[in-house]
Image 1 (tube, rainbow, N blue to C red):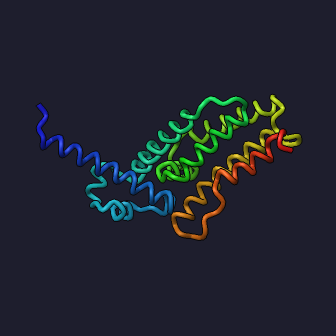
Image 2 (spheres, one colour):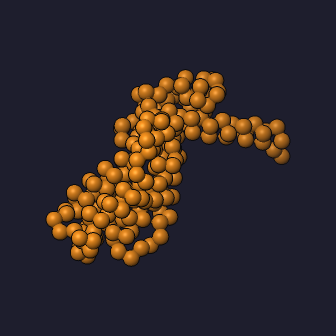
Image 3 (spheres, rainbow, N blue to C red):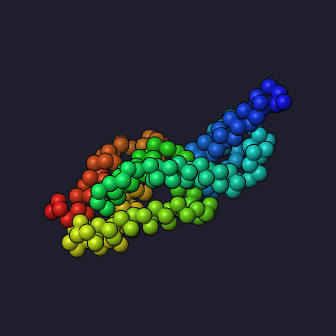
Amino acid sequence: MISEAYMKKSEQAAFTRANLVLSAARRFDRYGYDGTTLSSVCVEANVTLGALTFHFRCKASLACAVVQKGVDELRRTSAARPTAAGALTELSLLVLQVAKTLQGNVLTRAAVRLIQEGHVASDWLDLFHEEVSRLLEGATAAGDLGAGVRSATAVRLVMYVVEGAMADARRTLAGEGPTGPDFVEVWSAVLEGLDAHTR
């Protein structure tokens, strides 16, 4: 039979690990991999270096844990969108949900930054890019993409807009200037430019 003391110790270990992952995510999100030290994560988490290295042997393993948590959340977000009629509507739902998650969840922002910097391997960005491409190709085939707008160009635009949402969230949290327009407003303007039926 598992003792109460063992259960409490296990719960405390799980709490410390989760706290370390979240604290590391805050540092990675703000400063990137190279700008984050284990000692700064310890200060953020209010734990000793020994407690950190008990759970994570090095900064690379800590970064991997952040990416795993963040990407899991992004996968849930992408999979949870309702089925929509029309590729552009489905694209819009996907982009709005992913951007909302990236803006509001430091684990997801940190994960994407670590992937973009090349410190942790993950296929999430590639899969997101492929899904955006698939939907925009579907919009082109249906005649819903504006004349003169190539799907490849639209894909790049979507990726820029989502990355911009992440950067805005980072700047706002750091208090580096006023909050820009709401992302829904920005996305509506982008979608209007892409949609053949709004011209």
